[in-house]
Length: 278
Length: 182
Image (cartoon, rainbow over all chains, first blue to last red; front, side):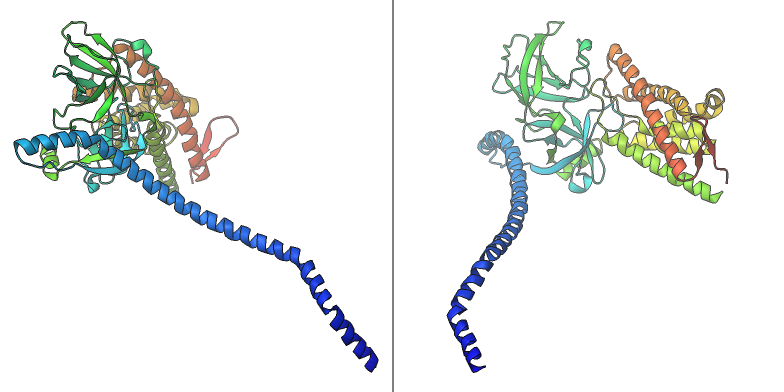
């Protein structure tokens, strides 16, 4: 009996290391698998967390970039105006304040108007005749507001009229930009055209209009600030009366894929006067 | 009776809300910038297929909604829808069978009437530019086709709402259906 116990103890002493090694080696693949699985899970969770964070940061940066690009549109004109005013009157112009809004629907309910509806309204300071831009250029103006929404009449609507000029050209390069709307004046057979051209009319008949010339707002009329890019000249024709010429203008803004716009807010005093019909 | 009234109001409410959302959100056709006149379709269905009081109610509600959502001089769509509704109740219901095709025919007429009145009101009030005659004709044709089809679809939808709310049961003889008078 004692001999058997001693034999077992001896065997245990001799084989303990081997048994441990065997057990550890046998267990190693499972351990490696468990480790790999844990790393996979924790890595996936971390990647998902990072992904959400990166997407959030990306969205915030994209929004900030859009706003900065919209502000950049005004930079040159504001600087020029600022310098002139400082020189002449020693006054400083205030930067227009922008309000970012998402497009929630397009076309209205009647189909008569070329409008889009945005997610900001009178509660956010939007009032009638506020100019609306996107990162590409001018979009239109506010024609109706409710507490939480506003309707924007697009430049392409046949009822839209904007005083514009050709950038860098002489004073004769000023005209009225009318939306092509839903038909082409003088070319009714082109009704199926999706791209709706705009017409810059009342340009000086003697002026040489270069194809690709930039069209910007002139600032006349008080609705649209000056210097906002609108589009570029595609072609020009003399009016049938020969008194002036007009140019077809392709808009910079892709109205079909408009998702986010910026409303240029006006001071409450001006908005109140306009609403009162003064 | 009260239960039937409540169910009808509920079904009408759902149909009107769905129609308003559809009309607002579905983009206009690029050719003539025609929107789906879903609200008109609902008004036509209730005028052609339900009791006169429901027809007039639907016409008033849909007309007010259409004027409000579409930046149209107030009352134009309301008048147009009510005229269409009264025309259905007083004349057309005696001439046409109570089915989807009748709703499509009335929808075409109602759509044209609405467009003519809206355009006249917009131009008269100075809010809208005068459009070329050829374009107006093309738009009228597009409006007639789209209104007819939309009125048919909305009639089927509104009838389905009536069926699942227990206001009507489909009969086997095609398009007509029996009203639950209880």
